[in-house]
Image (cartoon, rainbow over all chains, first blue to last red; front, top):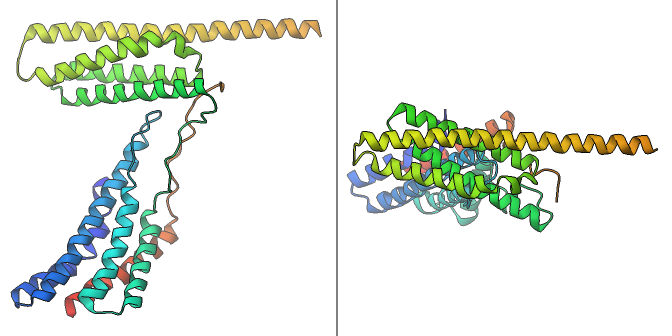
Length: 263
Length: 42
């Protein structure tokens, strides 16, 4: 279905293409230029809109990372309005006010179908203090590494190694979610975030780049061994965080019990 | 520090309702499509 996103914007201006071609065939340069320019603008708008829609869908899979976002859909919408007004004014010969009205109708229609993006960048967290911001930054950085890791996995042909990398990516996300639920875990997981995650991402990236050039069984075996170790370490990290969370909860329960008996 | 940092942005942005989208398609037809057809016939 995502292949059809924004298809309407590619289809509606098609008469302009025929107009430009007929203008060329009949030797009418003004018709060719007017219709052709309008068509090119509409196609640019449709392309931007489509990229914007796909980029919004991709952002929804991210939990922590805040990628730089250009409001492509909004630019696409404004360009659609502009192209409509310009075509009405130049290629059809309508007056300025009527052309403006056409542009406004197109922009409104675009907004109702695709929706213009809200101004300003959304903030994924309620970052009320400096420490919360640090945790959020660490999580965002870690998620970027996981995205790189998953990207590297898609380029590796060996299904077993690909599966292992994907599993490591999932384990990593589970740990990030644990840290997000209890930010105090960040201190306990600093080695995971700063050393292991960075290391496995670099190794996976390096393997993805070089394994096609040098088909070495030894390299493949080494990579397999290191991935198995990483899986164990990630699993151990997950269990350790869970255990400390349970211990913290135990302490909290004990404290509450004592407070209640003192009443 | 807050108790948890679970992102607030969990739900996808709301899509325009079906009625609004149909109206939007009609508006796009009567602007982009109409102007393109007029340019073809001009």
